[in-house]
Length: 165
Image (cartoon, rainbow, N blue to C red; front, side, top):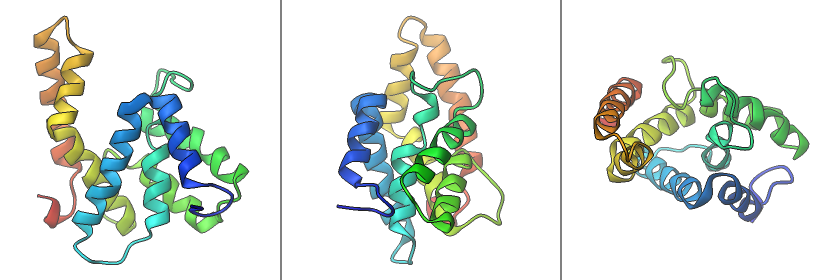
């Protein structure tokens, strides 16, 4: 299935699995499902959300990781990818907004960006998010706990839609 431009959703999913492992792929799929729930029947651009879901963490994966915010780095990685795959400018701009703001942003963002931020925050606050954080800190339970608390606070502050609270 083609999403938009020259990108096939199945190929993008496979690239996400290649770069981010099963967790990256499953996280992306959970986000798309959660956005559908949070939208509560309101219209949104599913292509924007699908592209953002698969691309939003690429800057945090080993292939592109740099000592900077992974949302910012993911936007830098996604921009040429979208251009190379002929994604229309307007769509690409909203995908990049979703990626750049997936840990929070201003009130003047697109509906897709708000949905996406909330879905990512709620996924992090769920069992999978907490388990991942503790797995990354397996040798230091206090560090894992501190990281969970930090991300809980970040995530709760990022949520913007009343339906997500």
